Length: 485
Image (cartoon, rainbow, N blue to C red):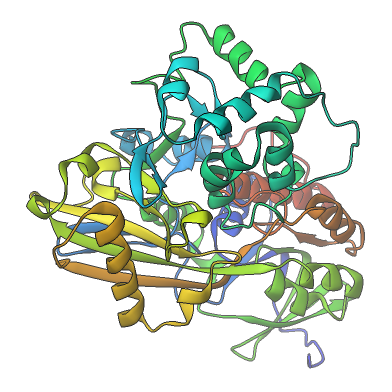
């Protein structure tokens, strides 16, 4: 219960709840507005003892470990723009290789060159690849003749890929690539919310393969589909934790309340009153929720019951990241020139995929050593997460011996569990999000990985846009000039 407000309780123009990427981006935008001369008073409240959310970079014995995202997509420009504004452009690095493997019948098979979202953009590498059987390849070819779906309703990624490319393409190629990004079950994952460009290709070109081939011709010579192409992913030389540190450095220290939770939110004549875990109470004209859907739903229950109910319906999946360090001589050389491996559900392994971290990016392991990262869990694949850390590491090592051929004991192991931390974009997700947004009271915004995009660039965009809407609602408008960090 909130106690009655007193005259001594601080009033803020904007309070941001949550200090992950979305909250940090919102705070950064408000800080830039303040530096540009707008008298905006903001506060970011984060329950954890540190900022950054799922971005977790640390070093141990010369290894650089990422348990959260290890890179970001540059085709969505919002985070790249922020990195440049923070003066971190010189620290950007690209993957050293884009080669990766798929597991088929317990063996590593190189992914064919020119595969984009499970669709071939190059003919001969795809035909020569053993990733799919010949009947599976022939079924994919029928995509050129299958008419587009007329129904405009959302459908699952699984239904879409099966319809256009066939069951084997879903199980062996598109499913691991597309659903794996979201730790999701492809038969529940919304196409509209995650890969709308595929539906657009079907509508425009009548065929995914035809659309990809035309796009490749337009790019000229196929540079972005072949060997040596420039990767659409980048990271920072010292890890993405550097981004969090840079953001924290440019924010007003008085605007950060770290290690403090918001326990309740109530309406107030001046906006909203927030009770903090310290016993303090603050008031805000605008409140930006960037917390995961379950936490946001609890806080909104009294002031926005309909939105809270729909937020509760966004399912959350659990996963774990298991990092393994090995001596270089103990690792097969075939793993040293690839960025990772995907393990399809049909293989029925504990590990869902690997990142060969020290092959993918420079500076991730000391000389003479190799760093691997195994992924466990995701929607429908969470059974192994009931194991304790010791048993989970052993299960991952058993898979690693079978799949990767590494027989030696690791010199380093580290486990990070993400309990109910991955929002699931089920079919109809965007309709649910629209309903949530429509039923929110004035002065409340809900953004973040559970809403309109889970990747770092989408979270950055959502945070900045929410901050700009809050400024507009407060009557500040848009400053004539926004300085960089």
